[in-house]
Image 1: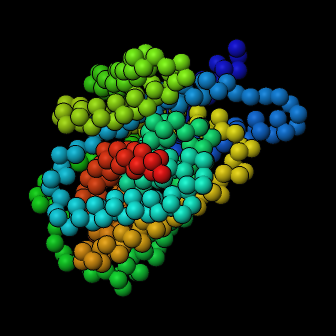
Image 2 (image 1 turned 90 degrees about the vertical axis):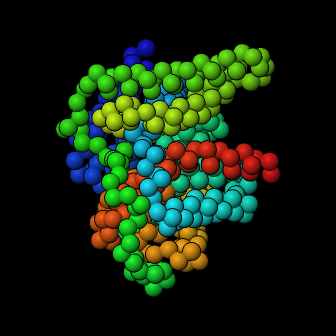
Image 3 (image 1 turned 30 degrees about the horizontal axis):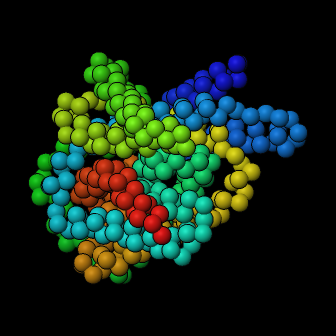
Length: 397
């Protein structure tokens, strides 16, 4: 009884410490999510070593699974609440075409990866769907899709780890080599604004300042709104399971997908309400819950399976990242989209809003910061549904 209690405490306390000390050298190097996965992997490694030494030891799987499902279920609407999708109408045709190019490119390459490689893998269609989710939206989209398709926790953990490895290498390419190469292929920026209107109300939903975080009544109300949406989705899933009344179908296999789809849809709808959207701190709470999910997931991984799966998943996510970007550049060439816009929209899809300011600063084009953040918000909203649509399509084959 003591071990599950310690496990629950660790799942919720360690992510808090990561955010509290996010300026620590390791956290600044790996990022908050990367740190959560690293610490979770160290726990999983300790369990693995003890069992290899003949000492039978294991964590409570139910604690990790339930904790991760609840955390991601509440985190998704909280992160979506701050996404001001109405601002998308202020983007110019060039930006919209460029981001649409990225969405199409990632989708095409993910399908090709499944056809030529993924169809022979366990969870082949699901992995392509998860790749579409993460490279058109972000990590929450990947995990939402994985939970909807009921992918096992170890595979989800390896998928996230593969994305981190590929992402860190490709990000260095974006910052150092990408602009010089694209200048030789794509036209230079013409100096035109990328927004139809100069005033845009948008914030970076991935950015948080813990020192400025304050507990307010509005934040508490919005948190319970997210919790209520998650509970409603879970209840709806339970109701569907009862109506189906099939003893061969596990309740969780209906409840979790229904909850994930519900929180995504209702989170997007709620983001159009100004009073909900402008509550400060929802992104901090949402990011904290993403860390809870990440640590709980990584700590419950079966590392014996990782030895055979990591390389395969690294190929899937690596090819989608590089191939999607190359095809995106090709489309930009056909559409005569400039190099800067191509880079920023690719960053918005592949990495999400958090990385936009660093890239626009690197290429010395601050005019693309706000459009990039808007595209990142659009990706959060669309990534899960686009990934699901392609995933279900690939399952037919």
